[in-house]
Image (cartoon, rainbow, N blue to C red; front, side):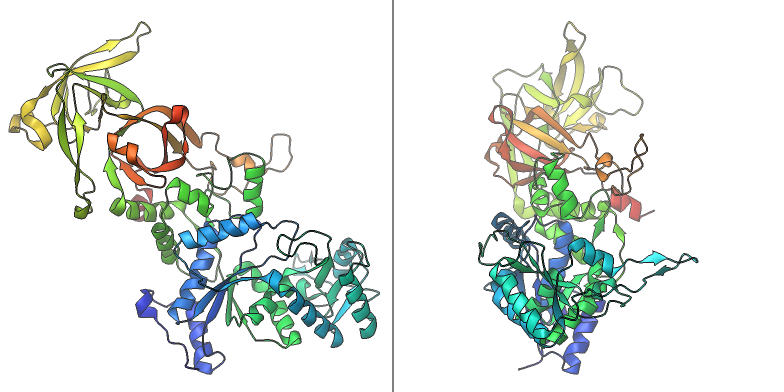
Length: 580
């Protein structure tokens, strides 16, 4: 078999990360002749942006070296796993632009293979059936403590009374565990390693436990299930995974990964760890995200405020923006916190190139052009995307009555206010210069309409030298606009590090949910948009001029209105910060 070739130049990656160096060394030494990686999610929740970094690394490393990446579901915990999560994960990975072709695997398909390897390890005297309860196992294992110099030490644990059972007894008990003879929790199969090992994970870890739970794929065929630390390296080995790439918290598990591979005498997969993605203003754990869903802090896993891939997709993020982000933050060996403003910068950069421009008014105020006839309507030419000439142009209807943003008029403006106020002139985007002549109020003193005149000689940017104005505002024709609902999203958490919760007033420990932003969603039901928005399909992304980027949601809003989620504003915080 030919040695794999580094295709760094083809993928556009610099190849300077430490994982690439390890792989090159392995190929050069002959340890491996090809590269095979895997993305191994557990189907107990929906993927989030932290997983994007993981499978970006898994797939891109395989591609770089001309190898393959498997999609394998590590589904050995029937209590929390479900086929709906499997489908959600596959949908998200494919949406992100990755294809695993025929390389879809399930750890649950390996149950017989894993059982046989456990028997093999028992026969070598390296595993035993234990009668200790979970609590007793934890007690016997011991815990790390601080000595008198405040240095963390790990005193030796204690051997289980059943640690020295004869091999024949262990084989018999393990077979009876499988046959369902014992109740849940009555026995476990444990590796026989070292109860004095400084790494607590190597103090006779559990390999199998008894759980009478119906598995979403295998049903009730099994009542014993393998533990992750046993299953994972041996599943990697079965698939011929050369480089098992995982996040940094598994570094302490690596000696156990290697131990099981050595004792089972299987393919010598190699584990390499990288720093996981930590992002400000969010939480990155399926356990915490599940709490947000179950406690109804959000509408579901795909709520646009969630960092799940489904939530980001619904919010209006693009696969290209997310891949660009994880590519640019790089692959490191040390954990760090990434400012969410950089993710938003990558998103704006992508949307600026691809999003069509339209005009929409979220908080409408009527603008009446008094020197135009009621029946007079014309079509003005507007640019679809100044960053993309091929996007072409469109026409927008213009009439006597328009909707403008309520903030674009003030009866008594502050200094340097260049929008509409009595006597001032502004340009209507793509249209004419108008001059405010007055306004109407209702009985409560609220402004209900603004009145103006327009200059017919200033259409589309034309104007004599004496008609230059400082302000330009957007608008939609009142007679032609389509009603829309706008959902304005802010950060779900009000602080940069949500997990750092302050103690509560009663003195009890704080919880990350204490940091939830109560104003993370505003729903505007009376907005108006250009007629072209009536044809928008779910997922279509636009720049609402002067307002931000918005995406058509799959929901229908009030009175069947089309819903547009605010993806992100136009202000580029990251670019501003990075220049300081």
